[in-house]
Amino acid sequence: MGSIDKAAIFWTIGIVTIGIGLSLYGTNLSPSPENQPASSFSDKEPSHLMQQKMESAKLISDMSIVSLSDNAEFDLVASDIIKTIGGESYDMLGYNQQSPGPLLLVGQGDEITVNFKNNLDFPTTVHWHGLRLDYTSDGVPGITQDPVLPGDTFEYELRFPDSGVFLYHPHVRTEMQMELGLYGNILVESENKIPATIQVPLILDDVLIAEEGGLEEFDSKVVTHTLMGRFGNTMMINGDTNYLLEVNQGDVARLYLTNTANTRVFDFGIEQHGLKLVADDASNYEKEEFVDSVILASSERRTVDVLFDKPGAYTITHTTPEHTYSLGTVLVSSSNNENDYEFYNIDKDEDIVAEIDKFRKYFSDSPDLELELDVKTSLVHQMSSDDHSSMDMNGGHGADMQSMKSDSSMDMNDHGNESQPIEWEDEMPRMNVMSNEENTHWILRDVNSGKEGFDIDYQANVGDIKKIRLFNNPESDHPMQHPIHLHGQRFLVLSEDGMFNDNLAWKDTVLVPTGKTVDILVEFSNPGNWAMHCHILEHAEAGMITEVIVN
Ligand SMILES: [Cu+2]
Image 1 (cartoon, helix red, strand yellow):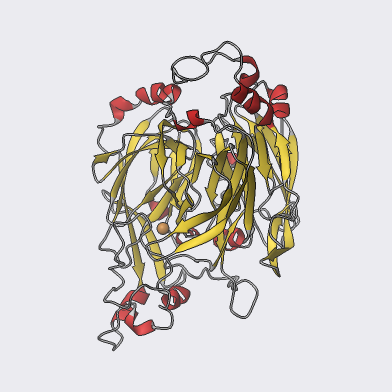
Image 2 (cartoon, rainbow, N blue to C red):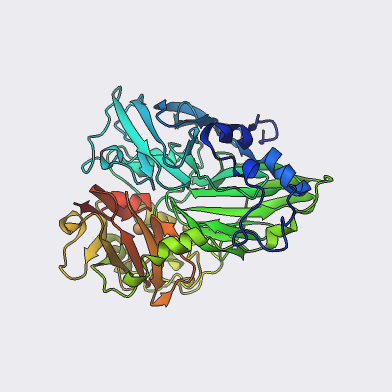
């Protein structure tokens, strides 16, 4: 039933690295002093611990692993599948008959060709989220390609200038197709050594299962749940409601986290374990830091290292202001392995610091573009003009509100948790279900021109370094956080409400909390026509999208 019975796939990185020249652990046994604390590895001979690492850096994946060398070709097919969730069968969608789709394992700097076939009953595309690839392979209808019709094929040319974990998913009715299971990870390996004994991709998701069974239905013509996005009621890691990771005491796990939920922001943690935060969407951080948990919005990724130094069963958690949910379990078996206490050392990534140094002179530039995040919805006025004087969004819908911590005076503009990393979750289900792309229109607005959405016509040139200011208007009809994603480029998140971010990393998606002003510095490195949109999938479908042209 759980993943105990599932044949987990073990892949020895040592074997892979021979082919693509990444065997730093095998050849460089005297790490440079700036990368290693003085206390560790001072001997010429490899230590016992290092021997262990050299032999055992395994990739553990529930998804089938497809290892692709430079110039490889790969066939990817989207089709209907029947997927088992919590012992029940559901009609869903998959890539190569799987959901999540296969994990593509590639090397930084390599290029591959994906021969895609659409065996679905409706149009789709594949978007390669976070990759700075040729825009003609970016998979966005209306901007880079026509939808791939049922039975048709499309050839995607992928390249991987950045290392880390990325994802692929459709860009047509994305809110439906991703919810039904179309997504997968790409792991781009760099030449840098990985100070871990195992590597594990963890895809966090939720699905909405209807009371009467089956997944909550979609309207084939109209996007629904546009107010807040479709929150699931069933959470999964790697497509499994009962996820289990089995490790040995002494293992250092490098966890690659990806959020593929339509709208849910996850606050990921592991009971009794600190997480060493290593990398963001598209690069390492300037410096590692220990955190209790990691906030990930839809489509964001993080890399964290965890030392499992004591045997036991530990719950993988998602924590909201109201609840702590179990996402799965890490089972740590006792072993004679020594705990690797150098894990507690904090490393600086001098390469990233040096790379970002070239951009610091732009940090104080004025914004080249100021975007306001807003919404127009007839629902709010409809509801508030209803003759229920006491009817705020809680009071009138007691049955819908049972999951809330109180029936106090919250109304739509006061979710009460706006200062928290996770502002709130599905608190107004009925209102949300009533919302659709016709009664609720999400807006990206150019503050200076007043233009909205595709009328904004923002252009830049390759080589430009530009600041973009994102203002999440707290006075809008329905203020809430929005993860804003820019295709095909990378950016630094410089500040929030003027508070400078002192640990930078390259990103492609940034969560803009309610009422906040977030400045990002975009390196326009990749020519073409690119989408920029909210990654709450229902918001993007309901208008929260624009196009950026890089000449
Ligand atoms: Cu949004």
